[in-house]
Length: 446
Image (cartoon, rainbow, N blue to C red; front, side, top):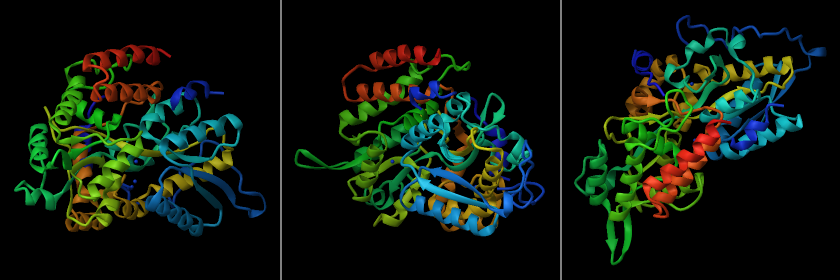
Protein backbone atom coordinates (compact mmCIF):
# COMPACT_ATOMS: atom_id res chain seq x y z
CA UNK A 1 0.00 0.00 0.00
CA UNK A 2 2.10 2.82 -1.29
CA UNK A 3 0.95 6.40 -1.22
CA UNK A 4 0.65 8.39 -4.38
CA UNK A 5 1.44 11.81 -2.94
CA UNK A 6 3.65 13.31 -5.63
CA UNK A 7 1.51 12.58 -8.66
CA UNK A 8 -1.62 13.26 -6.65
CA UNK A 9 -0.57 16.74 -5.63
CA UNK A 10 0.38 17.56 -9.20
CA UNK A 11 -3.06 16.57 -10.48
CA UNK A 12 -5.30 17.77 -7.71
CA UNK A 13 -3.68 21.01 -7.03
CA UNK A 14 -2.38 22.36 -10.62
CA UNK A 15 -16.96 -11.15 -3.09
CA UNK A 16 -17.18 -13.52 -0.98
CA UNK A 17 -15.76 -17.00 -1.49
CA UNK A 18 -17.92 -17.31 -4.61
CA UNK A 19 -15.28 -15.32 -6.39
CA UNK A 20 -12.78 -18.12 -6.31
CA UNK A 21 -15.12 -20.43 -8.18
CA UNK A 22 -16.23 -17.83 -10.68
CA UNK A 23 -13.45 -18.01 -13.22
CA UNK A 24 -15.53 -20.57 -15.54
CA UNK A 25 -25.06 2.71 3.91
CA UNK A 26 -23.77 8.01 -2.51
CA UNK A 27 -15.44 12.64 -13.05
CA UNK A 28 -12.02 14.78 -16.56
CA UNK A 29 -9.99 15.02 -19.70
CA UNK A 30 -6.47 16.37 -19.79
CA UNK A 31 -3.90 17.79 -22.17
CA UNK A 32 -5.38 17.85 -25.63
CA UNK A 33 -8.82 19.15 -24.62
CA UNK A 34 -10.36 16.60 -26.93
CA UNK A 35 -13.10 14.51 -25.36
CA UNK A 36 -12.67 10.79 -26.01
CA UNK A 37 -16.46 10.61 -25.98
CA UNK A 38 -16.37 12.35 -29.35
CA UNK A 39 -13.29 10.50 -30.64
CA UNK A 40 -13.77 6.91 -29.49
CA UNK A 41 -10.68 4.86 -28.79
CA UNK A 42 -10.36 1.81 -31.02
CA UNK A 43 -11.67 -1.45 -29.68
CA UNK A 44 -9.31 -4.41 -29.51
CA UNK A 45 -11.41 -6.33 -32.03
CA UNK A 46 -13.45 -5.09 -34.92
CA UNK A 47 -17.13 -4.92 -34.27
CA UNK A 48 -19.38 -4.49 -37.27
CA UNK A 49 -22.18 -1.93 -37.32
CA UNK A 50 -25.51 -3.19 -36.07
CA UNK A 51 -27.43 -5.01 -38.79
CA UNK A 52 -30.07 -2.82 -40.35
CA UNK A 53 -28.87 0.12 -38.27
CA UNK A 54 -30.53 -1.40 -35.24
CA UNK A 55 -28.93 0.04 -32.08
CA UNK A 56 -26.83 -2.17 -29.82
CA UNK A 57 -28.58 -2.80 -26.49
CA UNK A 58 -26.48 -3.17 -23.35
CA UNK A 59 -27.40 -3.75 -19.71
CA UNK A 60 -25.97 -1.57 -16.94
CA UNK A 61 -26.33 -2.69 -13.31
CA UNK A 62 -25.72 -0.04 -10.66
CA UNK A 63 -25.58 -0.05 -6.87
CA UNK A 64 -26.66 3.39 -5.67
CA UNK A 65 -30.17 3.94 -4.38
CA UNK A 66 -32.16 7.04 -3.48
CA UNK A 67 -31.37 10.34 -5.13
CA UNK A 68 -27.97 9.12 -6.35
CA UNK A 69 -29.70 6.26 -8.16
CA UNK A 70 -32.10 8.72 -9.76
CA UNK A 71 -29.12 10.76 -10.99
CA UNK A 72 -27.65 7.65 -12.63
CA UNK A 73 -30.96 6.96 -14.38
CA UNK A 74 -31.04 10.57 -15.61
CA UNK A 75 -27.46 10.31 -16.90
CA UNK A 76 -28.26 7.06 -18.70
CA UNK A 77 -31.31 8.64 -20.34
CA UNK A 78 -29.17 11.59 -21.46
CA UNK A 79 -26.59 9.22 -22.99
CA UNK A 80 -29.29 7.33 -24.89
CA UNK A 81 -30.66 10.59 -26.25
CA UNK A 82 -27.19 11.83 -27.26
CA UNK A 83 -26.75 9.23 -30.03
CA UNK A 84 -28.69 6.56 -31.96
CA UNK A 85 -26.32 3.58 -32.05
CA UNK A 86 -26.51 2.38 -28.44
CA UNK A 87 -29.36 1.85 -26.00
CA UNK A 88 -28.39 1.37 -22.35
CA UNK A 89 -30.85 -0.29 -19.99
CA UNK A 90 -29.95 0.68 -16.43
CA UNK A 91 -31.27 -1.20 -13.41
CA UNK A 92 -30.65 -0.89 -9.67
CA UNK A 93 -29.40 -4.08 -8.02
CA UNK A 94 -29.11 -3.08 -4.36
CA UNK A 95 -26.00 -2.30 -2.34
CA UNK A 96 -22.45 -3.11 -3.43
CA UNK A 97 -22.69 -6.42 -1.59
CA UNK A 98 -25.98 -7.35 -3.27
CA UNK A 99 -24.87 -6.23 -6.71
CA UNK A 100 -21.63 -8.21 -6.47
CA UNK A 101 -23.49 -11.41 -5.62
CA UNK A 102 -25.99 -10.88 -8.43
CA UNK A 103 -23.26 -10.19 -10.99
CA UNK A 104 -21.37 -13.35 -10.06
CA UNK A 105 -24.55 -15.44 -10.22
CA UNK A 106 -25.41 -13.91 -13.59
CA UNK A 107 -21.93 -14.63 -14.96
CA UNK A 108 -22.30 -18.27 -13.96
CA UNK A 109 -25.75 -18.40 -15.56
CA UNK A 110 -24.56 -16.71 -18.76
CA UNK A 111 -26.91 -13.71 -18.52
CA UNK A 112 -24.58 -11.13 -17.01
CA UNK A 113 -24.86 -7.37 -17.60
CA UNK A 114 -22.43 -5.66 -19.96
CA UNK A 115 -21.45 -2.86 -17.58
CA UNK A 116 -21.63 -2.73 -13.80
CA UNK A 117 -20.31 -0.93 -10.75
CA UNK A 118 -17.76 -2.80 -8.63
CA UNK A 119 -16.61 -1.56 -5.22
CA UNK A 120 -12.93 -0.70 -5.55
CA UNK A 121 -11.50 -3.33 -3.19
CA UNK A 122 -13.17 -6.09 -5.22
CA UNK A 123 -11.64 -5.20 -8.59
CA UNK A 124 -8.73 -7.61 -8.08
CA UNK A 125 -11.03 -10.49 -7.17
CA UNK A 126 -13.28 -9.96 -10.19
CA UNK A 127 -10.31 -9.51 -12.53
CA UNK A 128 -8.47 -12.55 -11.17
CA UNK A 129 -11.61 -14.62 -11.69
CA UNK A 130 -11.53 -13.52 -15.37
CA UNK A 131 -14.92 -11.84 -15.08
CA UNK A 132 -13.71 -8.45 -16.36
CA UNK A 133 -12.57 -7.20 -19.76
CA UNK A 134 -9.11 -5.65 -20.09
CA UNK A 135 -9.88 -1.99 -20.89
CA UNK A 136 -6.37 -0.97 -21.90
CA UNK A 137 -6.93 -1.45 -25.67
CA UNK A 138 -10.21 0.46 -25.48
CA UNK A 139 -8.84 3.38 -23.45
CA UNK A 140 -5.74 3.62 -25.63
CA UNK A 141 -4.18 6.14 -23.25
CA UNK A 142 -7.40 8.00 -22.39
CA UNK A 143 -7.06 6.78 -18.78
CA UNK A 144 -4.49 9.55 -18.27
CA UNK A 145 -7.37 12.01 -17.87
CA UNK A 146 -8.32 10.51 -14.49
CA UNK A 147 -6.87 11.69 -11.18
CA UNK A 148 -3.90 9.35 -10.51
CA UNK A 149 -4.87 8.84 -6.87
CA UNK A 150 -8.15 7.29 -8.00
CA UNK A 151 -6.51 4.80 -10.37
CA UNK A 152 -4.84 2.73 -7.67
CA UNK A 153 -7.85 0.40 -7.62
CA UNK A 154 -8.25 0.31 -11.41
CA UNK A 155 -5.34 -1.97 -12.28
CA UNK A 156 -4.75 -5.65 -11.61
CA UNK A 157 -1.46 -7.26 -12.63
CA UNK A 158 -0.59 -4.16 -14.65
CA UNK A 159 -3.77 -4.28 -16.74
CA UNK A 160 -6.54 -1.67 -16.69
CA UNK A 161 -9.82 -3.31 -15.67
CA UNK A 162 -11.87 -0.46 -14.19
CA UNK A 163 -12.63 3.23 -14.66
CA UNK A 164 -13.26 5.58 -11.68
CA UNK A 165 -16.90 6.58 -11.36
CA UNK A 166 -18.52 7.32 -7.98
CA UNK A 167 -15.37 7.74 -5.93
CA UNK A 168 -15.06 8.81 -2.35
CA UNK A 169 -13.04 8.97 0.82
CA UNK A 170 -14.41 8.79 4.35
CA UNK A 171 -14.81 12.19 6.01
CA UNK A 172 -15.57 13.55 9.45
CA UNK A 173 -18.96 15.29 9.40
CA UNK A 174 -19.71 17.98 11.95
CA UNK A 175 -22.82 19.59 13.42
CA UNK A 176 -21.22 23.03 13.42
CA UNK A 177 -24.09 24.60 15.37
CA UNK A 178 -23.53 22.09 18.14
CA UNK A 179 -19.77 22.69 18.13
CA UNK A 180 -20.21 26.46 18.31
CA UNK A 181 -22.69 26.16 21.19
CA UNK A 182 -20.10 24.12 23.10
CA UNK A 183 -17.39 26.71 22.45
CA UNK A 184 -15.50 24.39 20.08
CA UNK A 185 -13.76 25.17 16.79
CA UNK A 186 -16.47 24.74 14.10
CA UNK A 187 -13.81 23.42 11.71
CA UNK A 188 -13.62 20.33 13.90
CA UNK A 189 -10.90 18.29 15.61
CA UNK A 190 -7.59 17.76 13.84
CA UNK A 191 -6.21 14.83 15.88
CA UNK A 192 -7.49 11.74 17.66
CA UNK A 193 -7.02 13.39 21.05
CA UNK A 194 -8.91 16.46 19.89
CA UNK A 195 -11.68 14.16 18.66
CA UNK A 196 -11.82 12.70 22.16
CA UNK A 197 -11.91 16.16 23.75
CA UNK A 198 -14.61 17.41 21.35
CA UNK A 199 -16.65 14.26 21.97
CA UNK A 200 -16.51 14.78 25.74
CA UNK A 201 -17.66 18.36 25.39
CA UNK A 202 -20.55 17.43 23.08
CA UNK A 203 -21.87 14.43 25.03
CA UNK A 204 -24.97 15.26 27.07
CA UNK A 205 -26.72 13.10 29.64
CA UNK A 206 -30.27 13.18 30.92
CA UNK A 207 -30.15 11.30 34.18
CA UNK A 208 -28.55 7.94 33.51
CA UNK A 209 -29.32 8.12 29.80
CA UNK A 210 -27.10 9.66 27.14
CA UNK A 211 -29.20 12.12 25.15
CA UNK A 212 -26.41 13.23 22.81
CA UNK A 213 -23.19 11.46 21.92
CA UNK A 214 -20.20 13.47 20.81
CA UNK A 215 -19.18 10.99 18.13
CA UNK A 216 -20.48 7.93 16.31
CA UNK A 217 -19.11 5.61 13.68
CA UNK A 218 -20.04 2.24 12.28
CA UNK A 219 -17.36 -0.31 13.19
CA UNK A 220 -16.61 -0.79 9.53
CA UNK A 221 -13.58 -2.02 7.59
CA UNK A 222 -13.30 1.23 5.60
CA UNK A 223 -13.02 3.40 8.69
CA UNK A 224 -10.71 0.89 10.35
CA UNK A 225 -8.41 1.00 7.31
CA UNK A 226 -8.28 4.80 7.62
CA UNK A 227 -7.25 4.71 11.28
CA UNK A 228 -4.62 2.05 10.60
CA UNK A 229 -3.13 4.27 7.87
CA UNK A 230 -3.23 7.23 10.27
CA UNK A 231 -1.27 5.15 12.78
CA UNK A 232 1.51 4.47 10.29
CA UNK A 233 0.41 0.95 9.42
CA UNK A 234 -0.99 -1.03 6.52
CA UNK A 235 -3.59 -3.75 6.21
CA UNK A 236 -1.45 -6.22 4.26
CA UNK A 237 2.27 -6.82 4.11
CA UNK A 238 4.10 -5.27 1.17
CA UNK A 239 4.01 -8.54 -0.78
CA UNK A 240 0.23 -8.87 -0.12
CA UNK A 241 0.75 -12.37 1.28
CA UNK A 242 -0.19 -11.77 4.92
CA UNK A 243 -2.17 -9.49 7.19
CA UNK A 244 -0.18 -6.70 8.84
CA UNK A 245 -2.75 -5.58 11.43
CA UNK A 246 -1.54 -7.72 14.34
CA UNK A 247 0.68 -4.77 15.21
CA UNK A 248 0.63 -1.53 17.19
CA UNK A 249 -0.85 0.29 14.20
CA UNK A 250 -3.55 -2.37 13.84
CA UNK A 251 -4.41 -2.29 17.54
CA UNK A 252 -4.52 1.49 17.84
CA UNK A 253 -7.95 2.06 16.18
CA UNK A 254 -9.65 -0.63 18.26
CA UNK A 255 -8.12 0.63 21.49
CA UNK A 256 -9.13 4.18 20.59
CA UNK A 257 -12.73 3.25 19.82
CA UNK A 258 -13.16 1.01 22.88
CA UNK A 259 -11.73 3.64 25.21
CA UNK A 260 -14.14 6.27 23.88
CA UNK A 261 -17.07 3.89 24.22
CA UNK A 262 -16.09 3.12 27.83
CA UNK A 263 -16.05 6.85 28.51
CA UNK A 264 -19.57 7.03 27.09
CA UNK A 265 -18.66 9.65 24.49
CA UNK A 266 -18.88 7.47 21.34
CA UNK A 267 -21.77 5.43 20.00
CA UNK A 268 -21.26 2.35 17.84
CA UNK A 269 -24.57 2.25 15.93
CA UNK A 270 -26.37 -1.10 15.79
CA UNK A 271 -26.93 -2.95 12.54
CA UNK A 272 -24.97 -4.86 9.93
CA UNK A 273 -22.82 -3.20 7.28
CA UNK A 274 -24.59 -0.24 5.65
CA UNK A 275 -27.52 -0.48 8.07
CA UNK A 276 -25.16 0.74 10.80
CA UNK A 277 -24.09 3.62 8.56
CA UNK A 278 -27.75 4.58 8.11
CA UNK A 279 -28.31 4.63 11.88
CA UNK A 280 -25.29 6.90 12.40
CA UNK A 281 -26.47 9.30 9.69
CA UNK A 282 -30.00 9.43 11.10
CA UNK A 283 -28.69 10.06 14.63
CA UNK A 284 -26.59 12.88 13.20
CA UNK A 285 -29.56 14.44 11.38
CA UNK A 286 -31.70 14.11 14.52
CA UNK A 287 -29.12 15.98 16.60
CA UNK A 288 -28.41 12.92 18.76
CA UNK A 289 -24.76 12.80 17.63
CA UNK A 290 -22.40 15.73 17.07
CA UNK A 291 -19.87 14.13 14.71
CA UNK A 292 -19.79 11.03 12.49
CA UNK A 293 -17.62 9.26 9.96
CA UNK A 294 -19.28 8.61 6.63
CA UNK A 295 -18.62 8.84 2.90
CA UNK A 296 -18.05 11.85 0.70
CA UNK A 297 -21.04 10.52 -1.23
CA UNK A 298 -23.33 11.39 1.70
CA UNK A 299 -22.50 15.10 1.59
CA UNK A 300 -25.37 16.28 -0.59
CA UNK A 301 -27.98 14.21 1.26
CA UNK A 302 -26.84 15.35 4.70
CA UNK A 303 -26.70 18.99 3.65
CA UNK A 304 -30.21 18.87 2.20
CA UNK A 305 -31.81 17.07 5.15
CA UNK A 306 -30.07 18.67 8.12
CA UNK A 307 -31.65 21.55 10.02
CA UNK A 308 -28.21 22.75 11.12
CA UNK A 309 -24.92 23.82 9.57
CA UNK A 310 -23.18 20.68 8.30
CA UNK A 311 -19.39 20.74 8.06
CA UNK A 312 -17.02 18.27 6.43
CA UNK A 313 -13.42 17.83 7.57
CA UNK A 314 -10.42 15.56 7.16
CA UNK A 315 -10.51 12.46 9.29
CA UNK A 316 -8.46 13.39 12.38
CA UNK A 317 -4.80 12.38 12.39
CA UNK A 318 -2.96 10.06 14.75
CA UNK A 319 0.66 9.91 13.61
CA UNK A 320 -0.47 11.46 10.35
CA UNK A 321 -3.58 12.06 8.28
CA UNK A 322 -4.70 9.10 6.22
CA UNK A 323 -7.70 7.69 4.38
CA UNK A 324 -8.51 4.92 1.94
CA UNK A 325 -10.13 5.81 -1.33
CA UNK A 326 -13.45 4.11 -1.86
CA UNK A 327 -16.65 4.03 -3.82
CA UNK A 328 -16.99 2.10 -7.05
CA UNK A 329 -15.53 1.86 -10.54
CA UNK A 330 -17.24 0.97 -13.80
CA UNK A 331 -16.23 -2.31 -15.43
CA UNK A 332 -17.13 -4.20 -18.60
CA UNK A 333 -17.90 -7.91 -18.40
CA UNK A 334 -15.64 -10.25 -20.34
CA UNK A 335 -18.43 -12.56 -21.53
CA UNK A 336 -20.25 -9.85 -23.49
CA UNK A 337 -19.96 -9.89 -27.27
CA UNK A 338 -17.38 -7.74 -29.05
CA UNK A 339 -20.17 -5.46 -30.28
CA UNK A 340 -21.57 -5.10 -26.75
CA UNK A 341 -18.10 -4.43 -25.30
CA UNK A 342 -17.44 -1.67 -27.80
CA UNK A 343 -20.80 -0.07 -27.00
CA UNK A 344 -20.16 -0.54 -23.29
CA UNK A 345 -16.84 1.30 -23.58
CA UNK A 346 -18.57 4.24 -25.30
CA UNK A 347 -20.99 4.40 -22.38
CA UNK A 348 -18.32 4.06 -19.65
CA UNK A 349 -16.17 6.70 -21.32
CA UNK A 350 -19.11 9.09 -21.60
CA UNK A 351 -20.32 8.53 -18.01
CA UNK A 352 -16.91 9.37 -16.56
CA UNK A 353 -15.97 12.24 -18.84
CA UNK A 354 -15.71 15.83 -17.59
CA UNK A 355 -19.06 16.98 -18.93
CA UNK A 356 -20.81 14.31 -16.88
CA UNK A 357 -18.59 14.00 -13.81
CA UNK A 358 -18.83 17.67 -12.85
CA UNK A 359 -22.63 17.73 -12.47
CA UNK A 360 -22.59 14.22 -10.98
CA UNK A 361 -20.13 15.39 -8.33
CA UNK A 362 -22.10 18.53 -7.56
CA UNK A 363 -25.39 16.63 -7.37
CA UNK A 364 -24.15 13.67 -5.31
CA UNK A 365 -21.12 14.79 -3.32
CA UNK A 366 -18.88 12.10 -4.83
CA UNK A 367 -15.51 13.32 -6.08
CA UNK A 368 -15.00 14.39 -9.67
CA UNK A 369 -12.75 11.78 -11.26
CA UNK A 370 -10.79 13.69 -13.87
CA UNK A 371 -8.07 16.27 -13.45
CA UNK A 372 -9.79 18.58 -15.90
CA UNK A 373 -12.95 18.53 -13.78
CA UNK A 374 -11.12 19.49 -10.59
CA UNK A 375 -9.45 22.36 -12.40
CA UNK A 376 -12.61 23.50 -14.22
CA UNK A 377 -14.11 26.92 -13.57
CA UNK A 378 -17.40 25.27 -12.62
CA UNK A 379 -15.86 23.11 -9.87
CA UNK A 380 -13.70 25.96 -8.58
CA UNK A 381 -16.77 28.16 -8.31
CA UNK A 382 -18.63 25.38 -6.53
CA UNK A 383 -15.75 24.86 -4.10
CA UNK A 384 -15.68 28.56 -3.33
CA UNK A 385 -19.42 28.60 -2.70
CA UNK A 386 -19.44 25.31 -0.76
CA UNK A 387 -15.96 24.42 0.59
CA UNK A 388 -17.27 21.09 1.92
CA UNK A 389 -17.18 19.71 -1.62
CA UNK A 390 -13.42 20.21 -1.86
CA UNK A 391 -12.49 18.46 1.41
CA UNK A 392 -12.35 14.97 -0.09
CA UNK A 393 -10.26 16.15 -3.04
CA UNK A 394 -7.78 17.81 -0.69
CA UNK A 395 -7.67 14.72 1.52
CA UNK A 396 -6.45 12.71 -1.49
CA UNK A 397 -2.98 14.01 -0.65
CA UNK A 398 -3.02 11.56 2.26
CA UNK A 399 -5.01 8.77 0.62
CA UNK A 400 -4.06 5.20 -0.21
CA UNK A 401 -5.85 2.63 -2.38
CA UNK A 402 -7.75 -0.12 -0.62
CA UNK A 403 -6.25 -3.62 -0.63
CA UNK A 404 -7.60 -5.55 -3.61
CA UNK A 405 -6.00 -8.98 -3.64
CA UNK A 406 -8.57 -11.67 -4.55
CA UNK A 407 -8.96 -12.91 -0.97
CA UNK A 408 -9.63 -9.47 0.46
CA UNK A 409 -13.33 -9.45 -0.36
CA UNK A 410 -13.78 -12.31 2.11
CA UNK A 411 -10.97 -11.24 4.40
CA UNK A 412 -12.49 -7.84 5.11
CA UNK A 413 -15.56 -9.62 6.48
CA UNK A 414 -13.28 -11.56 8.83
CA UNK A 415 -11.53 -8.38 9.98
CA UNK A 416 -14.85 -6.61 10.59
CA UNK A 417 -16.17 -9.54 12.60
CA UNK A 418 -13.07 -9.66 14.78
CA UNK A 419 -12.79 -5.94 15.48
CA UNK A 420 -16.50 -5.86 16.30
CA UNK A 421 -15.94 -8.71 18.81
CA UNK A 422 -13.19 -6.65 20.44
CA UNK A 423 -15.27 -3.47 20.54
CA UNK A 424 -18.20 -5.36 22.09
CA UNK A 425 -15.93 -6.89 24.73
CA UNK A 426 -16.36 -10.43 23.41
CA UNK A 427 -12.60 -10.76 22.89
CA UNK A 428 -9.48 -8.83 23.82
CA UNK A 429 -7.83 -6.77 21.11
CA UNK A 430 -4.95 -9.25 20.98
CA UNK A 431 -7.30 -12.24 20.72
CA UNK A 432 -9.34 -10.63 17.95
CA UNK A 433 -6.35 -9.67 15.83
CA UNK A 434 -4.69 -13.04 16.35
CA UNK A 435 -7.86 -14.77 15.13
CA UNK A 436 -8.06 -12.42 12.12
CA UNK A 437 -4.40 -13.14 11.38
CA UNK A 438 -4.93 -16.91 11.46
CA UNK A 439 -7.96 -16.76 9.18
CA UNK A 440 -6.20 -14.27 6.93
CA UNK A 441 -3.29 -16.63 6.32
CA UNK A 442 -5.68 -19.25 4.95
CA UNK A 443 -7.64 -16.81 2.77
CA UNK A 444 -4.56 -15.15 1.29
CA UNK A 445 -3.07 -18.53 0.34
CA UNK A 446 -6.10 -19.47 -1.77
